[in-house]
Image (tube, rainbow, N blue to C red; front, side, top):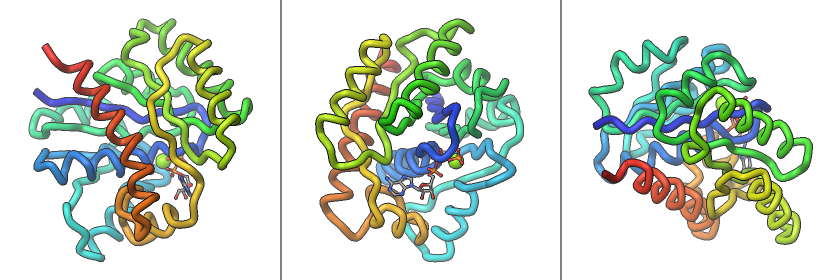
Length: 214
Ligand SMILES: Nc1ncnc2c1ncn2[C@@H]1O[C@H](COP(=O)(O)OP(=O)(O)OP(=O)(O)O)[C@@H](O)[C@H]1O
Ligand SMILES: [Mg+2]
């Protein structure tokens, strides 16, 4: 069976590509055949990142391909164990299509109300279009160092009726540097940053296992 996961958002720059790359790396390093479908053909963030990864000979190698349409991805999906959709921003037709074909959609979000409100709105829209609540999970990205602020964001999402994944990604230069070299959030030169990112990676993996077990 091919497992499909989508990273989608209304707002840009929230961490969709960053989390797509991290999750791909975690599964690929466990021997899974993984494909990132970069759905943002105008930017090609994941695709360009992978060129840097290949140039720097970083293992495991990850396959990234740009696609314009979800149905084009699904035509080749069965040759992979895991397909990760790195979505384009805005609630486009593709965003809904990604949610329809995926076992899980992760909505990365910052923790200000300006970030949380449109993310919850997108989740509500998906639900209205028939996506089960169970298939939707929120992930906190680019957070600051205030624990109360993070806690409030978690409560905001819970009160809206959605699952908020354990672990969050702080905004750090070390993560940016790693990305510039074609590495992921779990491959930085700082053990603490890798460990922090691994908490979120693991909670996504656990959620996927829960949703796909028979
Ligand atoms: N935790 C972090 N710390 C520092 N920089 C980060 C972090 N997360 C993401 N970034 C940087 O922020 C920018 C946006 O992240 P990313 O490309 O993952 O967002 P996105 O949601 O895919 O954006 P888009 O909507 O444009 O596709 C990138 O330059 C990325 O390297
Ligand atoms: Mg992106």
